[in-house]
Figure 1 (cartoon, rainbow, N blue to C red):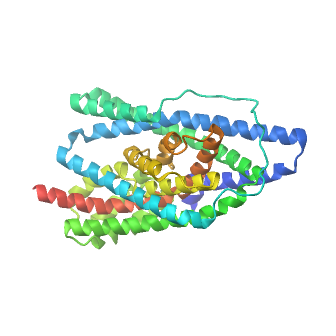
Figure 2 (cartoon, rainbow, N blue to C red; figure 1 turned 45 degrees about the horizontal axis):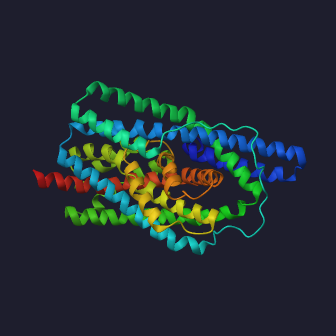
Figure 3 (cartoon, rainbow, N blue to C red; figure 1 turned 180 degrees about the vertical axis):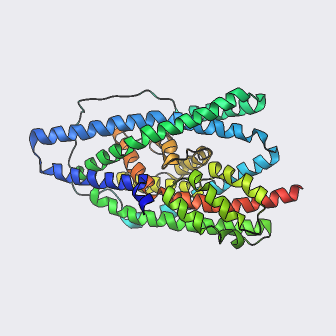
Length: 398
């Protein structure tokens, strides 16, 4: 319980509550005090969102490039197998979430409200726009630099990239995470003021849908692992509850890794050497549970804001790219969502206004981070199924 009270999820829940109460309170103000209050909230939301978006390319490069360089000492075929396995699992989970959410969300009555909404001031008194790098350009640069280091055996640059990743994650923890509650709080204050708060209760059903999809995907992957390896996947899964609930509290695959290794060590069907190699690798490559949450929330937030489902082709393209970005996604709460948000803007929200995109980002970030523990728990638990497949692959090559 103490761990949860110190977690980012709890902090964001408090930020949502305070922001919502503040938004409801300022509806009682009139004229100048109301205008001043709205301007302050809009400026906080604008500046914090600009800072967060500016950091996204830094996070992508700082985490993807070093992850690629770490593969240099591994056997090529084994590396290829684990990469393909992690990607296909994440992609399958993404498609499950897309089709499930497109089927369920329209029945939750999450469309835009017919009630009149209060208008915000048309112009902010202060605007501050930070120039940033295109997300896909950053991803391509990270891939090329990582591969170049591996091909040329540029060990000094490899060491630099490892240190750079440590620096980036430190900046995320010391700058981005402290800023996040202010962004979320200001966003929900404006949502409450406009009269949209009543629509948010529908997200409880979306969170339930996300958890159900995650459970279904864990079962699918353990069944697939049993079929491929011709071993009983239950002899891996039954040792994972400790790791699952640890991940639920920490929201970090890295923090849960020691417990996951301890759990899988009890399994009689996965060799220790395989587990020691596979689990640290999959903790950086495999984010099936997080991808499930991302796809369901993009669908539902789009529906609640714009009254329609996003185009299926856009969502499928987004899934293909999101599962690439999931490789080396930062080990911080909401890391995948942070990395993917500008891709959402350039693919799914390409026809929307900057104000609508900012509102979309605010709701997505809040709801995604609050549920992130379930995504991490799914990631960690499903890693056991992938480790079982990897063990079978290694045995077949010996």
